[in-house]
Amino acid sequence: MSDSPATTDVRTAVSTGGGTLPLPLVGLGTYGLRGEAGYRSLRDALDVGYRLLDTATMYENEDEVGRAVADAGLPDVRITTKLHHEHAGREEEFCDRSRRLLRVDVLDLWLIHWPPGGQARPDVWERMVAAREAGRVRAVGVSNYSVAQIDELTAATGVAPAVNQVKWGPALHDADLLAAHRERGVVLEGYSPFKATDRTAAPLREAAERHGVSVEQVVVRWHVQHNVVVIPKSGDRDRQARNRDVEGFALSGEEVAAIDALGR
Image 1 (cartoon, helix red, strand yellow):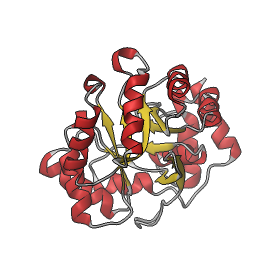
Image 2: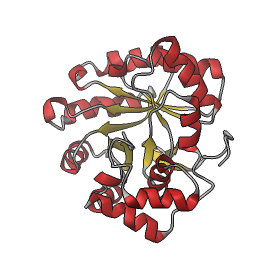
Image 3: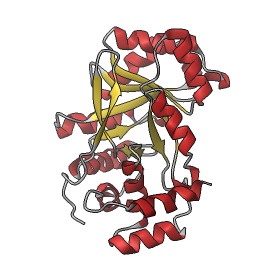
């Protein structure tokens, strides 16, 4: 496997209301990447080819993410950030705060981090959609929502979330849940992909051995072949490069099926 920044450029498309926004299938989770060390890790990630960075208000690193992207001077980086559920009712304030800290005029993708109070809250969703319609955000979505909650938002507003970001990985694979999102035109995005499975599981180890790659690369490649956006987190440049270097091999149908079965 190479360490080339061009190794992973597979993309999906998320709805912007009036069109679509290309989104890399492999991005970087940035939780815990704060301060100067976090900034350097973010620059490393951009250097090795990441073009999707995932942050959130609660991560307290939007400033580092924004500075890293601005200093890198790359034209095609997408940034996701998230409204904390406790800030429901203050959407405009925190949209502007995120734009300021991230040093952008328009947020690429803005999500509701968790259902506020465990409820779908169509009123919050209406204000997220209003921010998109006002041109402050390109695409809006949710995180940690159930399909029923997504349906409630869509029924109330006529607008489905572009993305639902959930904890996902081989041990959590649910074909019906994935199909339900696709039927609704909602892109599934998975966080904590390595924590969400047993990396010693035989199908993962055997596939890694056959292809001469790491188990983590197999997990990322499995997401890509399911067209699920994946955002593994690492502050180490070598691991960052290795995790996204998944274009030099493909899992067979039998390998994918064996890995899928880990979720049963």
